[in-house]
Length: 275
Image 1 (cartoon, rainbow, N blue to C red):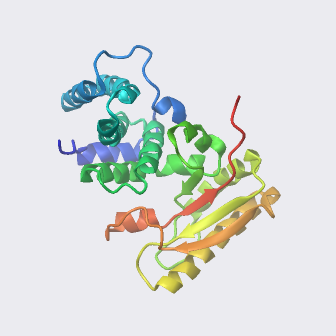
Image 2 (tube, helix red, strand yellow):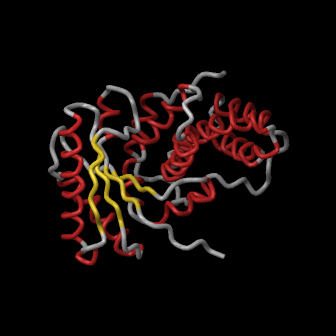
């Protein structure tokens, strides 16, 4: 198994700071095959994509890997199950290297959902997911509460939008930066047409289990109160739930893991599928 092609620290810093990402993508075209598929089977295309990445030819790598992803259905079932998360992981890396954060976010959502309940995959894939999660906080907050997530349904992604509302450790106070994100989230929820929206608060693993459940509920209620202030039409549509630390996204004991696990999620009904 090949090891992770690590992003240089400076490149990652630029990714986190850049505001000039390419035009916004949707989930469907984040993984759509190129107009002209590269020839070869999924395995050969994966290797060719890796070679392009090593030579810093990210546009070529993206084309090759999307071609390979489109041809996974032709591979033997067991081999395809092994190769698919690796292909998605590399596609996320490529999107990050190209500063295409929206595409990286959607690819990350698909990969995370595909790996749910499947711990048997290379460690480097978890590192890529975490890297993308950190890099796409603004993008995730932009779409949180909207029906854009429904465009991921064909890839098996649940309609659950995570928002990175900023809370200090042990606190349910929303800071000013988070309130700016909640303005966009309130607009998304108000325009989406859902009449029942579950707002689920989460904590990191530190602290007492019972206290964490209570804290996560206070956080969910604080978010709902802020949303009502911004969009009064949401009154009666939002319900708070405190999950505590029961559903961590990351198992690490580092500050990044703690910060990413402290989150609020919005779950709402799917809009009808288009005919």
